[in-house]
Length: 136
Image (cartoon, rainbow, N blue to C red; front, side, top):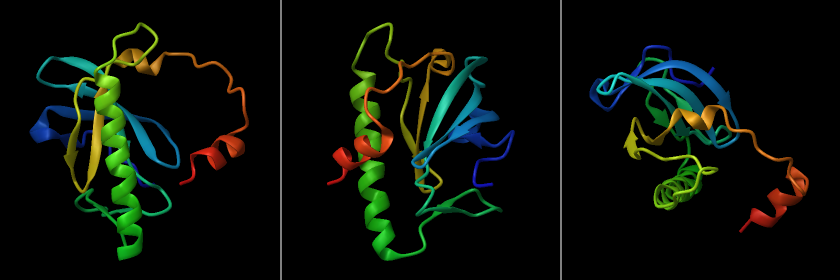
């Protein structure tokens, strides 16, 4: 399993991982505790599953080849840009981003725990069709 371990901390102990909520091709979502505010957050970690590895001892994310490194860095930049964009939005149906930071060779985006209970409408196009539209 490539996810962070339970009780792993980020940002010098500010966030403590409670559980993994889900994993996709580009990221892992965790339930975490903000130890400074004594409350729960959802944390999205950028983790490009097909290109990244996690060191079991340190939890640092590594990228085995230089070619993959360029691809991963490009998508990590997009992940950060997306978080910055969403942070500026204010709408009841949009997840509230609380922070963005880089640590352990990857990026993390904590959000309001409301994100864990939101229901999303069914996509109007297939995932494979959407994927083709997103390719550069």
